[in-house]
Amino acid sequence: MSDHTHSAADDAWAALSERQPNGAVETPAQASSIFQRLSPGASDEGPQDLDLILDIPVTLSVELGRTRIPIKKVLQLAQGTVIELDAPAGEPMDVLVNGCLIAQGDVVVVNDRFGIRLTDIVTPGERMHRLSK
Image (cartoon, rainbow, N blue to C red; front, side, top):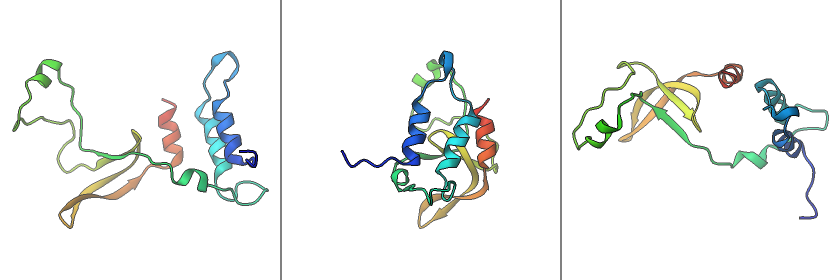
């Protein structure tokens, strides 16, 4: 690949892979500045080419609720077993991308398939705040 062109995306990935002095991990603020440079029109060099990452697959999941149970109970699970979750009925479901909360929404049925209608989107600032915890 001798015609590899250097781009802001290359700079961002390189910055993410660099270690901080004494092994420290980048802070969310540092990571945020990297991704802000990737946003369209974020630099004087013209529009950024985000097409490099737009086709990367991610896992989007909807979480109904959670519970903690001992392994003994997991081994006793059988068809028809009901497991109580911590989420109250009627509450919005969490929408996660690769395990990170990005939105909440209500369950809908469309053409005999479940779907989710987004009711609240987590802002990028809120996402960064959650990552820093």
